Image 1 (cartoon, rainbow, N blue to C red):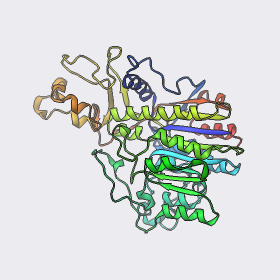
Image 2 (image 1 turned 30 degrees about the vertical axis):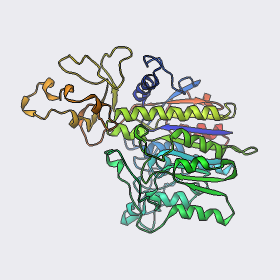
Image 3 (image 1 turned 90 degrees about the vertical axis):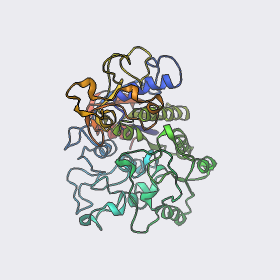
Image 4 (image 1 turned 45 degrees about the horizontal axis):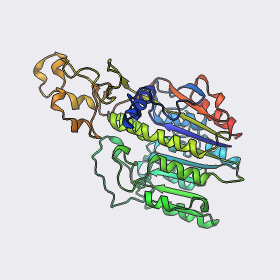
Amino acid sequence: KNIIIFIGDGMGLTTITAGRIYKGQYLKHGYGEEEKLSFDEFPFTGLSKTYNVDKQVPDSAGTATAMFCGTKSDSGAIGMDTTRSKTNAKQGSLTSIMDWAQAVGKRTGIVTTTRITHATPAATYARVYHRDWECDSKVPPEAQGIHKDIARQLVENAPGNQFNVILGGGLSPLGATNQNEISTVNWEGGTEKVCSRTDGLNLTQKWLENGKVDNDKRVFVQNAEELEEVDFKKINRLLGLFRNNHISYALAKEKGEPSLKEMTEAAIEVLDRKNSNGYVLMVEGGRIDQAHHQNYAHAAMHEVYEFDRAIEAALEKTNADETLIIVTADHSHSVTLNGYPSRGNDILGFANKPTDPMVYETIMYANGPGFYDHLANDTSLGNNPISFWKNFSLITQEERQSPTYRHMSTVPLKDETHGGEDVIVFANGPGSSLVRGVFEQNYLAYVMSYAGCM
């Protein structure tokens, strides 16, 4: 009857293991290694092959298109197959699980900690040549007037304009920028930049006006307090946008931002109706990925913790006999859990003794900006690896506990890259037995379709 798919963006096996240990240590439950995540005991698991048609190591657009539309595609493609064209918006266009759900009378919704127009949520409703086309200002000249930007598709086109719940960040792409927004932490990375509209449209206003046509009870909220005040059973559709860009990392959440757990609970309240055909909900912990891209290991681990809390809440609020819950990642990351640290060692700490000639961290990255943060200023010391890196005694404990502290990386890159290994799929509820073995990522769309009779 009901399907909830949880996407931990970038949550590969290393991230799951490290996140489990972090949870145990954060909650002071013991050493950490013996801790359990809410989905650890799901009865069925499988491995999903994440490559894109054109990439050995994938991006989130192609992987989301595979999971939600049932067709593997190119890196960057949203809701389109490999025949996509910049000059023909219909060529290669696909339908998604949300189209299939709505066709059989199910209620639908999306929840994310990223912009609602970002790659993973976008693939549930948009068909566009490239993931970057979130605003009209990002659509290139040769595609203007042909391809509609992602934000407009959400509000103007099916299935997005029929969603019962839309919760996340991304006021700016919808033309409703909050000019008084405050950011207390200076997060870095390309994803911290967000496009703005040049066509003058306020799509949040248009979304509200769409409800007046058929007397459809709608509510638009912009902070946690407003969300808490909503009588969910008295409305049909809920739009909540809580930041101009992404929702802040949970480790340093700004005032007025709801947690992923709170958004998930709200979504289920709106979607769950007696005597209905059920619902399909996509929930994304999207900032796991973005933290990894900047080698923000602490922020990434705390995002996993918050993601786990959301899944726990969903398990409590749903009937296991009629709800299929899938937990997976779209792809992995080039993060490692290494060394020989002692049992119960701080997962964010050192892998060896501080007195050793060369100290290194348990969580490290194959590449990324952390390289520069740990590189010794004096590079005239030659090829001695011990003198190549800053001495950790020069980094205070306060600096290491900062949300923006970067862990070490081997190859210097502006942004850390994804990992190409298979990701785990956990499943519980009706149809979960279909998740077993090793399969192509697009198989998941058909698991949901079959389980939900869509």
